[in-house]
Image (cartoon, rainbow, N blue to C red; front, side):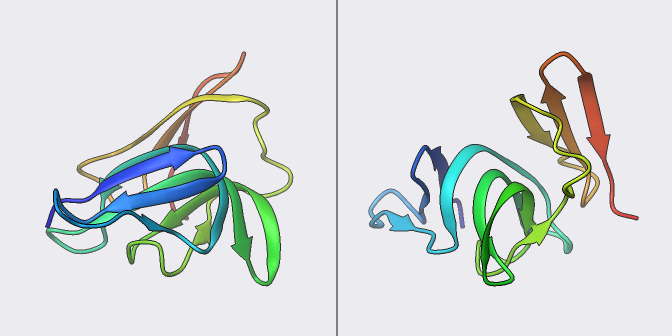
Length: 114
């Protein structure tokens, strides 16, 4: 099924189809950038979000990945790697877990799972 994801200043929303109603993700308070990439299994996608997400009971600013259409989020960065102002975000369509971040004044950063 095709989905449309929209990063909005006060929400992350998605549409499951042309006639489907908009659904707001309850775990994302603010979404500034979003990107889709290859998921953990064939035919699935991972969604990356830069914004503020409810994570471990706290509202946390950072880069997050969800492999289950927004039901749970894994933080990609940490407090020592915040990268300043992000200009763009892209996820690899062929390699699960790989994300590209364009940070202001720092070039393009590549993130991969350890």
